[in-house]
Amino acid sequence: MDIPWDDVQLFLAIAETHSISSAAKRLRLGQPTVSRRLAQLEYALGYALFRRDVTGTSLTTEGERLLLPAQRMAEWAGEIARAASSTERTPSGKVRIAAAPGVGVDFLAPFAAWVRDRYPKLRIEVLTSYHYLDLARGEADLALRMRPSASDDLTTVTSFEHANAAFATPGYIKTLKKGYGIADVGWICWAPPYQDLAPNPQLEALIPNFVPSFTSDNFLVQWRAAESGMGAFIMGNVKHRFAAPSALVPLDLDLGPYSRSTLHLVCAKSALDIPRVRTVADLLAAELNRAKKR
Figure 1 (cartoon, rainbow, N blue to C red):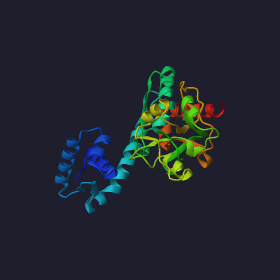
Figure 2: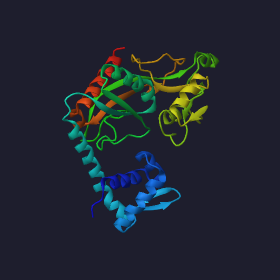
Figure 3: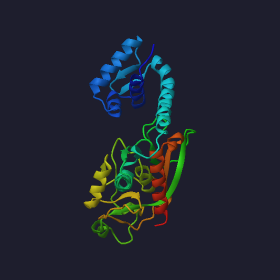
Figure 4: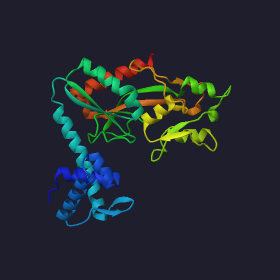
């Protein structure tokens, strides 16, 4: 039987998020709608695709048979969309950039305003996420990531090595003892379910019996906590031209092996054939290279 593309996307979202509610968020649909459409799909197929329990969903044997073909179909759907868009003559339309929340807030939001002034027909959409979106499937057009591309379908446009630093208010820094070390600082970190994101594991490796002074699952809440004098948090110490004035200043701390990171601009290879994506990729690469010299 023919399975509509919308139903394939629904199946993949549930299979990859292991949850009806998480799939609904990815698809931007209501949870009852996703449950209803899944039930209709399973009825049409004549068998169940998922097992449901209190922890979420898992694929049945029949569902596992469909997973790889569905993933390949999604990749080709992304390729078809990019091929259709490659006939554009001038850069116009929406370009979606995926990045971690800190990069989105500090760099991409003001970058988007700058692009709008130069290219009024271009619109930047920033997708902040704690996991990597699938560029081959077209979930985003470009991504700024901590890891370079590892897939044959992706390419790394440019890489940008930068320093990391701990930031806090001058008032908080004055409360630290003279000659303070990394274990003397009250650290602002990620709360569950993101406790495995940097810098939590790195601080645990550097500080015996590490316990953060404040945690949140939201980057902006962490930033605000630091501005309120709650403690210090770690982020890239990047001097780009879009940086906004801040009450936070870097601490005089050696972060050891975690003192530097590399940011990679990644996209699907065929995405660069699309004028709007190529234009934004070139602008991003130029800004990252400019920041290297500051």
